[in-house]
Length: 295
Image (cartoon, rainbow, N blue to C red; front, top):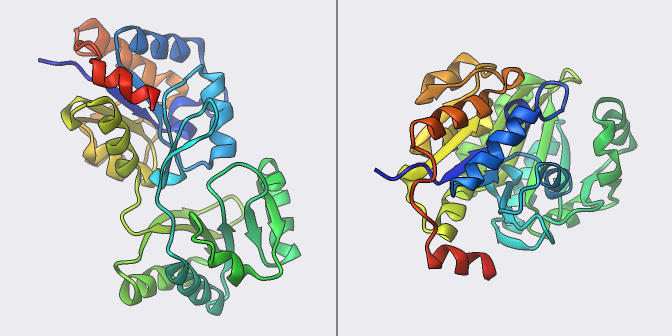
């Protein structure tokens, strides 16, 4: 039996402890997985600008999955391997529907790092400054946000009261079912309900499948670690779907296995367990795998 050869790991609430640190045990486990021939890939809802520093902190040079699976890129130079952006007409329609309902909308114009998240009003910038100050350098005002939507954006981030968001999700599903995917995050730190909008078919499983194909890794040879709603698809997709102990009950309920929490180094404990019983990276990488990394 071949071992697990691809480990797809969410970042926040999974690899990182609640204080944002990475334990020495987790770092050691990631190195062990790589030594045994496994590929470790970050799979996150973060954008490139906030994913790359984590990849570098973890000393990972393998492809990263960002924007909930809409983007796969190389952390060394941030070159894009795969991106699936929202077609301009769908983005514009989704934006107009959200604004007509009174929701705030942040448009992620580019998959690249930099000031590429646009909002319509100073109040929205102030809200970011208060609740997510580390993200503020990536935001700017746009006089014509509809124009930004016409650039095939990678993501729309929509916030409003819960009843508004619930209505929007239903309306998008009814009016444009083949155009969009949504990730519902529930109530955030600012008391508002948030949902991310992506191109149809985008989820973390899409990114995991892309990375697996790069290395010639079978779906049955993949592990996915996660703790939240945007991890569900990759947990279901993986040969071994692992929910963190700190994940909500509905996430733990769909996983093959529940690990200890992120503050208990749950990812490390699972890696160590699999390595000890010879189920991690047992099949050596092939020439195709090596060639995939050169292109």
